[in-house]
Image (cartoon, rainbow, N blue to C red; front, top):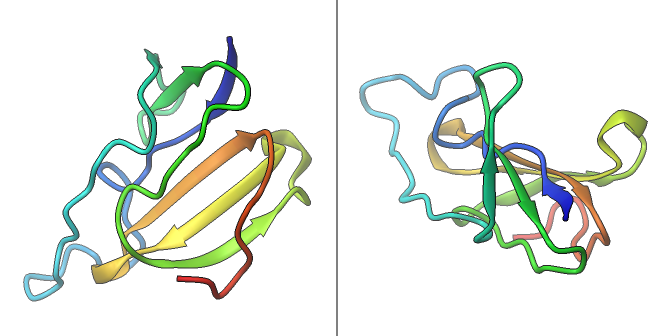
Length: 102
């Protein structure tokens, strides 16, 4: 199996301001079904799936990064959700979205 999604950061990591009392919290769902591996830094979840498995956004949001410029993460997508929560999906086989897309 190849690690297709490096981090499901939404439920664990939030951008500045996400913990404000009035900030809405999105309803998150698993982006992919696979083997949960031990997270390396406690801020995310590693999920291993067969290569080519589709990975979906954990909640509605806007793509703020979609590229392979950060070589240690391979092809990576970052999505900003309501309440400034952020999810990151890395080591992807392909990228089917672009920055700014909802």
